[in-house]
Length: 66
Image 1 (cartoon, rainbow, N blue to C red):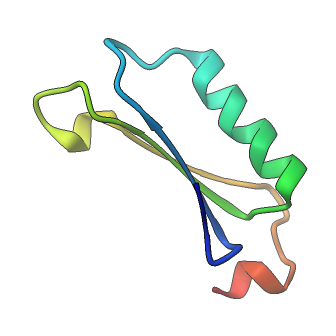
Image 2: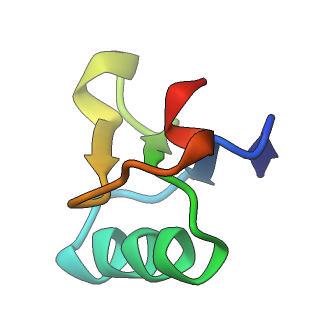
């Protein structure tokens, strides 16, 4: 889900986040040129345990100012 062209959300409901899920989000961020991404897994008992924030290195284009 793309929010205001400056945040990409990847929503999951899986038992465990794997490195491939982070790589998938990172690829989407690079392809769409979105500076910030959130990977959220709704499967855990606490939401904070399923959060992962990613920032593109050198994300200094106009969308990064959001």
